[in-house]
Image (cartoon, rainbow, N blue to C red; front, side):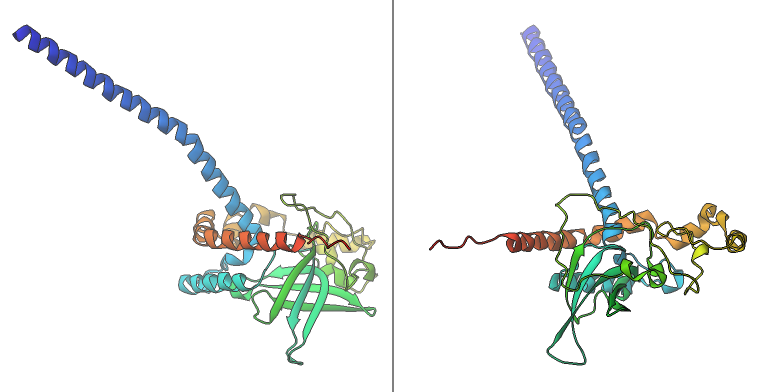
Amino acid sequence: MLNLISKYSSTITSLTRSTSASKLISSRTKAIAASPVKAHKNEDIKKSFADFRHIYPEFLPDPKIEFRNPIREKLERMDMICRRSQIDIPEFYVGSILAVTSSDKHSPGKDHKFVGICIQRTGCGLRANFILRNIIDNQGVEILYEMYDPTLIKIEVLRLEKRLDDELLYLRDALPEYSTFNPSMEADPLPEGAPIPINPIKVKLKPRPWLERWERKNLKGVEDLGLPERFYKRAEELAKPWEKYDLMKQYMKTIPEEEQNQIFAEIQSELQNIEMSRRKLKRKRTFLKPSRLA
C-alpha cells in the first residue's frame, strides 16, 4: 500500500513539474514573440514624434530659460488644439505656396484672400507666425499671419515643397519672377504618403545695395553673387565655423528629445483625431457626384 501511495505521489509531482515547465516555456515564448512587436511599436512612436517636430514645430516651447513657464505652455497647447479643431491648419514649410483667407477688420463682413510663398516661419505656442510674399502690380507685398489668429478663415496649401534654405528673406532682393504667383492659382496636391519634394532652384539677386549682407549668410539657394574678392574675405573673417562644434550652445538652443517626446505624447491622440477628420473631409471634397443622364 505504501509503495502504491509513493508511486502516485511521484507521478503527481512529475505532472505538476511538467505543467509548470510548459507554462514557463509558453510565457517565455510569448514574451519573445511580443518583444519585437513592442520594439516595432516604440520605433513607430519615435518616428511619429520625429515627424511631429517638423509638422508641428510651434508646439515645442521656447528654448530660452527666461521664457519658460510649464503651466502657460500647457494651457497654450490646449488652446492650440482647440483652435485646430475649428480650422484646418495644414502641413507646410518655408518655400510652400499658400492661400490664406482672413476676415478684413477694416470692412466687416468681407473676406480677404492672399496667395504667396512662405519666406519665414517663426515663433512658438500661440505666438507662432509665418510670412507670405507675392509681387502684385510690380510691387512686393508681404503679410505676416499669426497662425492661431481667430480672424483666419482658411489656410490652403497650393504647392507643398521645401527649399534649400531655412529662410527665404533674400527674395526681397531677388528678381521679381521668383516671388510672382497667380492669385487664382489652383492647388497641386501631393499623393498621400509621398515624400516632401525639395525645390533645388537657385535665385538670382539684383545688384547691390541689398537689405542684408547675403554673402555672410552661407546661403545654398542663391546663385553666385558676383562680388569683389574683398567682400568674401571680410565674410571669412567674420565667420564663426567653431560654433557648430559648441555642444553647450546647441543644447541651449534646442529642447531635449525626452521633453519633446513627453510634449508630443500629451497631444498625440488629439492631433491624430484632427488629422483623421481632415483626411475624411478631403476625401469628401475630392468625390465627384455623377451627373444624371438626360
